[in-house]
Length: 585
Image 1 (tube, one colour):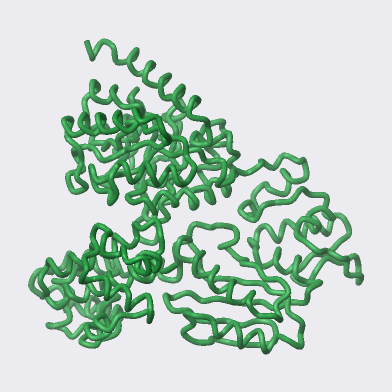
Image 2 (cartoon, one colour):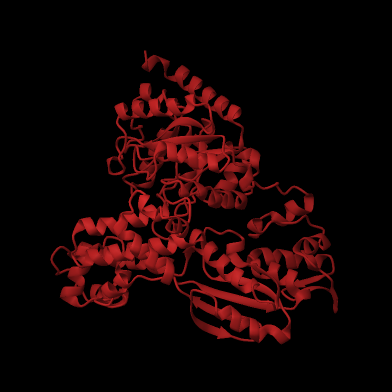
């Protein structure tokens, strides 16, 4: 994906310029350009060729040449020149929570620290605590951040992994010697974070050396880690490892199933096969010494007396029993979505106007879109004052008066304050079509306090959705310490819908508790938390996680028709007015 490559290079330039102590306006120009590229609905190459790239907000004429250089060569000479002034590992220090350019400059200048290993050694030797602006607490916090980074460093977000895997797969399939090939592993099961990129390909034994060489020649390959007659392992730029398993055509279905996993699912399948007198492994399905012809995974399941189990469900839970009884859900598809509700605009911290977000939703074929900018306490994100809220309502009314889709709903992402109260008074809250209640501050309260905070929030009659319920940031921050069951119980009792925040850094609620939430008859709603037009497409990651939780379309609010959604919001508002009547006279 060109956007990701260009944005990453521009952001690295901004980081290096900050290290240099450059003019902050120049630093900001590269950072803004990176954000603008990420927010594009089109690929930057298309705009460059059309001559309209400089017209994009955040990309001045001076940066067009830099972006063109990245698109043409995959790199930027300015970035290389700046990086040459520092040790290769210095940029890794920016991955450590709490370290910014000023502190990293001090660490490099005073102690010669140029890598994560150098940083850890200096901390353990007690040399960081004596530096200006640090101290013993800072040193301990850096060690804790390094430990957190170590836990996560071998994992990747699914939003980074899938495009990388699809590029490698497309290259692999371009070989005339590859009969069939598929992505496998945890990525095919749509886990929220991914280790290696696993591939399975049907390749004749005589062609495997040629395919191994072809595979190693893909764009973005750093080096070959190993190559044999059945397996090739590559190290890719960006930190991914990609493993290719080459099998005979008659082994392909069984191998794809086996290498998709999970291990727990495979154990259950082998046990099931044994009970019916068969053996299943990566080489095929056998009755005694006889190999049975199995051309697809569907046929493999059928021979075991099971309905087809979607890859997302293969986690070794109760999928075998459900498949045996014919009770597997018909999983939600991307095409089932008819709109969404949690998006931001330039009214707060979004990068696209209200009209641009509406047009982006229309391009996706959606009949409605909910605008949910930040409330006033989120000052860092341009949170809206009550007067700004009413001004935004007028703009939404003007759009809706045009009579063309999408219908815009008036929403708000309302901060949950420290004591669980909401950020606006009841009178203003009753004017919204819906309210997304979210925590954006004081994440490390004791368990009892955080639980009480969220329970009080979801108990407010005006709350429609609980936003990013655990507050986790994948590979960066654990969720809040709280009694999640108590919060979900309170939400269920009051008819509050728990959002599935589809931002790939969040994917919150996690699919495991979401699975239980859905099974108790409660609904979710897939929200991209989009801050740009391109961000609307993050619903795709949410659909993947919803499928993993076993969600059918009927269990997701934003698969419903416009009339049904209007009815749901009207019912909630009417109930809230009735409950709040004594306090709003």
